[in-house]
View 1 (cartoon, protein in one colour):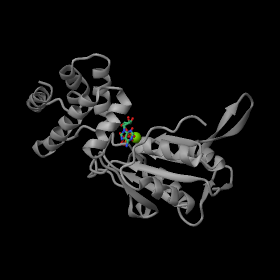
View 2 (cartoon, protein in one colour):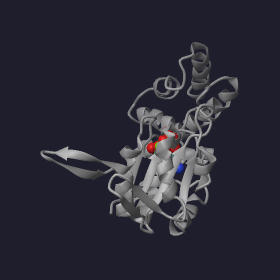
View 3 (cartoon, protein in one colour):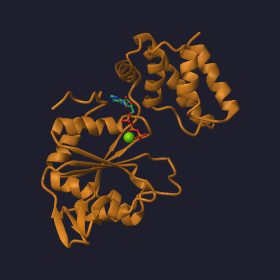
Length: 259
Ligand SMILES: Nc1ncnc2c1ncn2[C@@H]1O[C@H](COP(=O)(O)OP(=O)(O)OP(=O)(O)O)[C@@H](O)[C@H]1O
Ligand SMILES: [Mg+2]
């Protein structure tokens, strides 16, 4: 087993997750983009010594994409497990990323897995897959994003323990940025301070605020020798907005941070 994926805990989320796993409870991770949800699951799967099966959900994801389908081989058809069925058989941690994107009829296949039954019915083969104790279902979603259009139904939400994520506190976020990029401590601190200011612009119309992921990207360019102002422009500001007025206001904050 290789090295643990680096994850800097923000609180007691690691212990809580381990308890949920031991108690066979499914978990929902809520939090903005780029705040460490995926990294947390990778870290926890490593700690629990379970394989991790990740599925990126989208609005075209059908139940059969998760469960499996018959495929034709030469002159006969054979059943192929989808990622969810495979995860149940292996006793893996199955991570469904951005689950609100998935179609409602797809989400419903999770219901029998996330209550006392813990089974995955495979209608097409007639099989009822019983989940072993090690199996765990983890969902993530980004509250606020498209929330008026899409949301999880209460009958789905109430099957999960929900862990709330946010960006790490400044000192911790600077540690993450430094460690992930190899940049100087002073650059990491300046980037995090800048991010604090940019995140306040949400009130002024910035729809999406920068996550830790964007800070890491900017820091990597800086560590590779890019001028910090350029690195911030291309890796931090441009991905956030196309509005020239907002971009100009943000660039002024950058220039003030890296004078
Ligand atoms: N607590 C943390 N410990 C270690 N790295 C972190 C942490 N938080 C954020 N990161 C860094 O930020 C990057 C983005 O995090 P991650 O991919 O886990 O975000 P996410 O919450 O899954 O975002 P999305 O909702 O867009 O999928 C990681 O690749 C890692 O470099
Ligand atoms: Mg993610």
